[in-house]
Length: 289
Image (cartoon, rainbow, N blue to C red; front, side, top):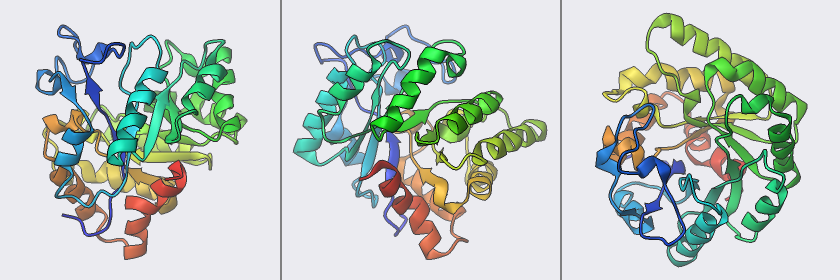
């Protein structure tokens, strides 16, 4: 296990027993667009005690929960549930909450989330071409006003729009989730992905989260994910890289220690200070934890 402390910037919890929380992606008949029916991660509950049990042999002093209760009528209910666990167990130290940024009440919802002390960011799966939606852009700019990170699930094909949006609102810090979901492994796609990432990296407010690579590479090895990890570091620089596990989703493909050890092996050629930056210091600064 990696000796350098690892801050997990992307994990999820769920409970199907909560009276108001809903998880559309965990419905019995739901089929994930990348992963299929994902039966193996559909237990009735995966809460903070389950997560702590999985990280017990890892050096994970802090972790960031990313919203997962997709379909919940009031997304603040998830934040309340998470904060209660944080107050009891210490984790998660940071919460990335759901806000429907295109809605007229977006700022009201943001302010309600901020009643809970561990909220540090927002993720919104906007419908359609949301990056070009003026209403969504208005909501996006509110995140800078409230000092919240915008965690965005984007794709290489949308890099031009995301770069333009981020450039127009430099007060908003952006964290691109899961290396922008690279979905092919041929060289033409890899070069296209690199060009897109370079376009994003030209905007200093955009950071890269290396996480979730198992979703696009279910039989991953250290060598199969190495090009994506190393290119992300090369393009964004050591100081704009954070790491996450996407747990428990990526549990379908490996164990928790395997993921962290793979990252540690890939970045082992960097100095101790650079490794510490990527594994923990950058995350602490980005999410203020």
